[in-house]
Figure 1 (cartoon, one colour):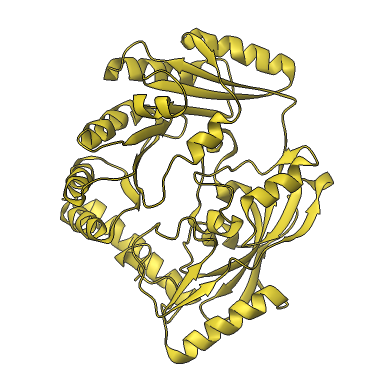
Figure 2: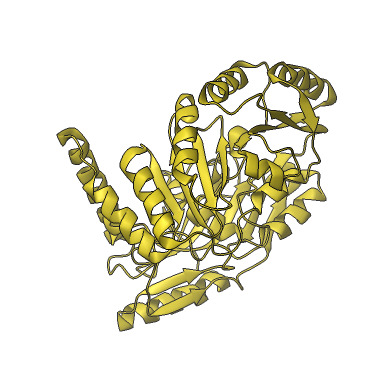
Length: 399
């Protein structure tokens, strides 16, 4: 870690944090406000708006690296890199109006994480203004970089609780020469059929960019028949894509899809939606899928999807009576291992937290949780000792 020369963009943020520290005021960090309702509810005395901190600072196509200010929209980065036949292979859920900084701060990912990983795998370097008012740089702007302790991974996914991200360097990928976007509908929706499809998808002779399961309602939203459906995204040279396509055909009858189907999927969450997920081993996805579908069955217009390769199942709840939503969340929190929430109404957050606290734990598990929480508090104390930044957004562990 090194204290950076204070850049113009970071200076303004540093001054605002310093003023808040002097007054003992808590701070809400806000980007382009696409996901400002994500995480636990935050109540703060002031807001630091990072949405104006935009622009690409450096783009070196030959190195496949790009550095941009945190408020830069993902769409702006996509347009700049497309001109060089490159891309930032993240495409997290949400629209391209969302900022790079919020994507990294929340470690948000989308279907492309199946092949390319999460933001922690894409971020090379980061500039942050901590809660102590220090401007620090971690990592660098090149792919081959050695910088001691990996603070880039620490700040990625820290939800603004350790500092305000002001600048980010990322690795890029070459766009494939050929691609294919396919759908495979399940012959039936019984758990055994889902489990078989997931097993066959895991061993097929293909290396897909994305492998996403969607429920019948989500399939209709994507313009497909009402059936649980596997979406497959392939990329590479023409020969490789043809071979992979033949492998995917072993899963069932294929339907060709337009490339835009992934953008429809990413932007399927209306403003104000609640979002919950279960994360487990990929081999457990069929059972977790069933748990999620069953828990959400009584709620209207729920969209369920899951990453076959990562073992993650998400449910998008556009609108639901609070009592019914709370009941579904309680069922999942009590019985589904790996359950967590992304966005919930404040009252339902409180119910979820209380349900998690009531879950019985073995002595070993309880000790592990205590150690984890103590580590989180120590890290928080090092970078934001007054606990001013985004208070409570990650729950009580570091509040």
